[in-house]
Length: 270
Picture 1 (cartoon, rainbow, N blue to C red):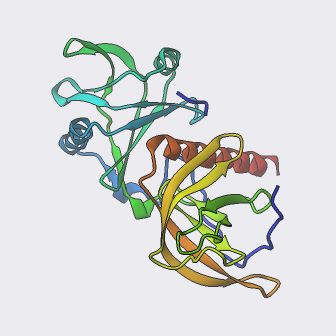
Picture 2 (picture 1 turned 180 degrees about the vertical axis):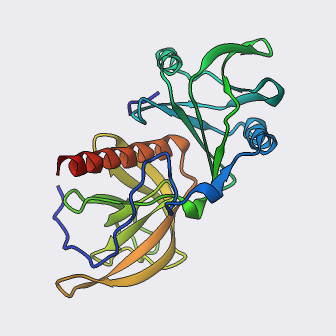
Picture 3 (picture 1 turned 90 degrees about the horizontal axis):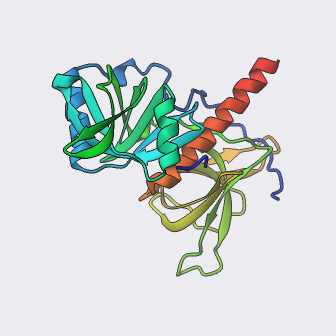
């Protein structure tokens, strides 16, 4: 369980992203087309997660706390879903005492998300587990539908790209202009990294303020030129995370959630 100095760059002439809460992680505002309400289909999807032992992240306390778990079993005839205990006993107790838990998993490049009003201690096949009611709905999102949030230009988020073998001096720090759980968009202000469509970079590092550092491979999916207000032209690239660990993905979700809270607080103060 976790509770888990750079020069400022000029503003780019780019469209603003639509900000939505973390647990509604979609690129569009209308998510009804991604919601599944069929109980047999929901049970089948959760059974797939159980059979594949997919890691599931359970968020609670407004997304500020989470535990890594997995689906232990599904019994639709009893209206129950069972999940494993996490490794931290204290975290398990906090989860049992809270309400409104959000579960997030990624299986075969598809993001699956559902909620529970509460958890209860239970037993399944002779072992201790947690139980919840079968969710009334389930959100199923393709990776391309991940919600993206723009990062603050006053506190630039950087991605450090290690050098390629063919270009040992090409280590670069590129500025992240938006981020999701599926990838990032970056601006290359210095052009040293060979960022071209199709390029793949291993062990890229992103330091999330006050949360820690994530390490992942990235693949460049698209590039285009952007013109800034001062007339300067730089390359923007859309990059996909490859093989990211679930714990690192959870840290990114916490970062997104924190940005959301900060922006809501700022809007409320106006």
